[in-house]
Image 1 (tube, rainbow, N blue to C red):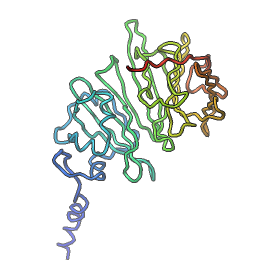
Image 2 (image 1 turned 30 degrees about the horizontal axis):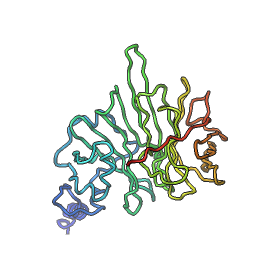
Image 3 (image 1 turned 90 degrees about the vertical axis):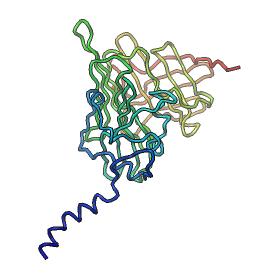
Image 4 (image 1 turned 135 degrees about the vertical axis):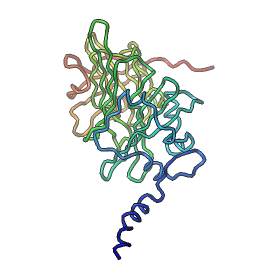
Length: 312
């Protein structure tokens, strides 16, 4: 009897490991459960630094590109690496918010370009969204990292040292908004913009509705409006710079009249009003949005609509 009991732990281990994939090559048949469980489980907080992306990954852990794109749209990778490019993909980690979403950390590399992605799946293992958490080889910076903390807030941080011993940085904080099925920017702290051109995160979204389009003063002061899930709920991205004062906010507004849309979220004091006409939009901050801007400025002003050049 004792002899049989001595084998019990080994048998339990075999049962536990049965079916667990040791590789995800393109010639294999893989389920979504096997794909997710291939990523090593990690405790929070999970921090991915630029040094992590530089380290050589084990080839046996490489995820086949065809396998990867069965579960995550390749268009999300093409935004960074370009069409026709197939970067090498590696698992970095996995965690789950109880009874909610599962998060996968993915490393993608090609040449000098490397990106760490954070992919989100619902409790039924259905893909929801993916966020570039960290990039190297695209812009010059001294150090950078991305973090998912215990509150399931996502922070991206880029730092650059100047010749005069000054340090500039850009820190963004996101949460996953399950209602809108998107990573929502809730805080930005730039003491100086590191990236020369401001990145519009909704630039490629459809703009077919009446007031969708770009309302631009210049390349660092603009409001982008795109179609939402409903015509009455446009998505927007605002970026402005007034001297040494900056602000940035992305969200979904709601039309309360034919020409007026309001941004307001439960538990968030920030409220914006957008008054549209055929040629411009007037923005006004009607609730405290200090978390999204510097203290001495506000979300306000009149922005002319940029004319769309129709292709012949």
